[in-house]
Image (cartoon, rainbow, N blue to C red):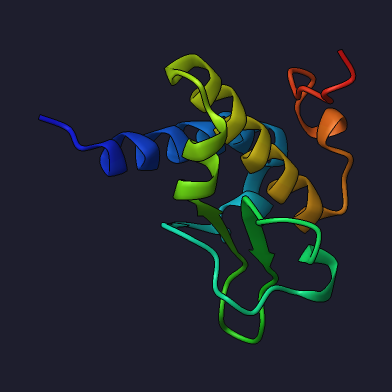
Length: 115
């Protein structure tokens, strides 16, 4: 029996693994983490809502880290298909931000929400 938390972790890892071939060796040093909710001290640019993920650039020997927030994402998803899509988009957004790219340039399947 797989818990919801484990399923969510697997979605994040699957989304990240899909991007690895596009970025090559520079992607190997990026760590991914899942936390239930963001900390209570949002960054100044996050004051408009609850963040779904955050990028922490590398610092010294500390590798870059991308943190995805499970509960805010789950709250936005109506079903498993939508959860998978949101997780995928958030991972793409965070990786793109880390590497200074547009999400659509990193992953052509990225949903811009312009529908």
